[in-house]
Amino acid sequence: MIDTIALMIDGKLFVNFSKDNFFKQTISSGNKSFTKYVRNPSEKEKQEFGYLPRLTLFNRGNEEMVKIEFSAPKLIFNNNFDELEQKDFDLVVSTLRQKLKDMGYGIFSRFLSDALVSLIHYSKNIPLTDGSTPYMYLKEIQKANITQRLDFNQTDFRNEGHSLKFRTNYHEVAFYDKLKDLEKAKISEKRAVEKDNYIQMNLFEEVKEYKKQNKTPLEILRMEVRLNQRQKIRQILNKIGHKTEPTFKNLFSKKIARSVLLYHLSQIEDNYPKPLYFKPKSAKDFLAQFIIDNPTVKIKDPFTAYGFQKALNEISVREIRELLKQYKRESWYRFYNKINNYGYPKNTLPIFEPIRNSISEMKPLKTVDFQNKMLNNDKYGK
Image (cartoon, rainbow, N blue to C red; front, side, top):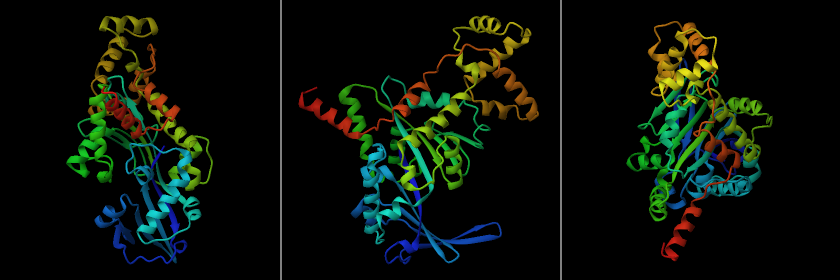
């Protein structure tokens, strides 16, 4: 439901607040510079208290605002494979309060609950048990032409095709192979999409053991929508019809999480190239069906559409656009819109249906479910 979140709180609301343990940083941007103070948990604190939040102190005139950034599921479960439920809010607040106390900062729970949110990541782990893999999904999703629709200016398809991001500075939609990411983290934290993997490295071995014992395919595709600015949070809330003050208490919502994830999934699905919905058995099938569905087209159009579909099966719209960058932008959009607006047989793609169903159901994924099944198998000698 929710993974990473950042709360902004006035330093005066803390009990005996001191920035003595903060590390001073001067940030330059053009002709301007500002100072911030960073307080990350030490290795000793990690060993003693487990997962802890990261703190950043900003000076704004006479105010000192503290940003508290943390992964809510890691706070409770020491991993973000397990997913929180809305009923867990009070537990998250009380645990966060204790973790801050462990770091030397006292604060009342109500100030945490009512704090404004400056960053929030909504997420869902989608189990794949039919033999499909996250890579198969990612390869298709990256073909969606959503750069302009959602104002994304960059698409990253990396880690040997195991992670995909559509992003700007303040807004990001990410899909990635959760188990492969843990595998990467075992080699180096820098190679993983997730950060702070030090507390959840045993998960990879547990899932491997589950798959071995049950002889059942299990892969985890993860979707995240990362809203990294309060203005962007308000904008998305307006688009999905949830006009509410972006406080921690208000945004810790199953309904909002579902709406945010489904909204972005719909944008991707709506902008998946229409020619790719048609899966003909041969060139003959494509040309025959295309002519039936578009009886008034010119003789060159079926062949142009077929060639475009063949190209899309190998590379994304963005990559095709890059290859054709010598041509005018207007020419490209006229061409793409014409090809995309022809009639094609449209079937629901299997890559979107499992993701949509999992988000709509919003059933939390729990490691205990896998652990219990492994224990039962051991008990009955399976």
